[in-house]
Amino acid sequence: MEGNRNTVKKKILIEISLVPEGRVTTYGLIGQKVGCNPRLVGRILHGNPNPKLYPCHRVVYSTGKLSKAYAFGGIEEQRRNLLREGVEFKDEFRVDIKKCLYNP
DNA sequence: ATTAAGGCATGAA
DNA sequence: GTTCATGCCTTAA
Image (cartoon, rainbow, N blue to C red):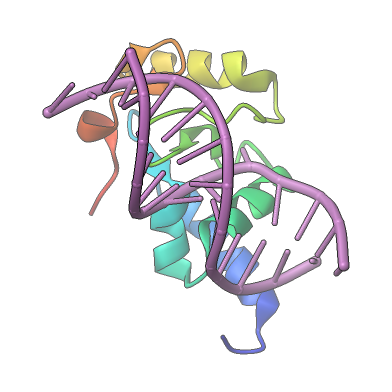
């Protein structure tokens, strides 16, 4: 795509900040919106400059499964955060993606 | 129908 | 050339 690499990074962070409480989004969905592949989304999240501004715990796989490499307290902390917001879980580390997906 | 596991393609740093 | 916090496909149970 265009030579503006920094914009992609910024867009990803903005998209994540748009996800409301009690909802989740996926790496692929964000990738579509900002025009990059899902892996890049995960990469950017890993270097998340501010977890409070950008709720990366609301980003899961398209299958609803949580990433095992959540870097801000671990996958257990991510699950705890989602449960607190009212996200339903099917398994210990799998959210009910059909109900909680933020899909405007 | 649903789930889990393995393999491959993809794009930016 | 390598590294990824993925998605999709196929196979098996």
